[in-house]
Length: 256
Ligand code: NAD
Image (spheres, rainbow, N blue to C red):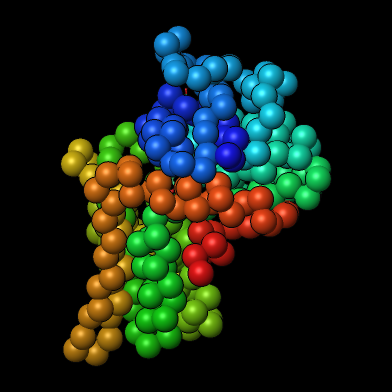
């Protein structure tokens, strides 16, 4: 059995991870970490990662918390040799590399900006399309409680498109068509790719990548309608993280 600790176990994603791990036959939730967890959890819950790891042997720590706490959680777990599966967004690549360098016993820091297999494929399809279309824009749609904008997936998609364009710039104007009082109409420019963020009730997480060329458009769209959509990717990360060491970024590394 893979022994899993879930950090952020009372949150939207963390509680879905708890359900998914408990339903899997090859892993178990040995403890949770969350300062705001209810007292009646079916497993021991601690207010900090240090207290949890002092009390339990853990094979993998899963973290879905907040951008302002995840680094401290990882800085506690990795030097103890605990493999980490991280979905919390907001950490820079430099910070992830610094944290991975503190790992003991060849522990792995696995971070996925998006755990849905569909979003990973959407980014791979966008990479394939980018060289053939002069224009590209990203529109992402999320629930209105999301704290950051644009989403980590939208930023990563824009970066992938820019890399695949190999320096070629979009011909469509990014900002100069804006009229006074309507700044932002053309979105945020991420590596030269306009990114638009919609926040509304009714969405979990959706994204469209719209490519344009003479007389044609190509739209790649992915929808997460439920948080269960992330769980096959999280379970794949938990099963795979022990086979790797150092920093691994992106679920595609484990999708054979
Ligand atoms: P949430 O606010 O519902 O849950 C966060 C939980 O973390 C809360 O229960 C909070 O009490 C807890 N917490 C706060 N401080 C803590 C600490 N020091 N230690 C442990 N737990 C602590 O948020 P959410 O919607 O579940 O999202 C969590 C994170 O996951 C966000 O960064 C979000 O952007 C990210 N996310 C990533 C993916 C992905 O595929 N990578 C998908 C969805 C959300």
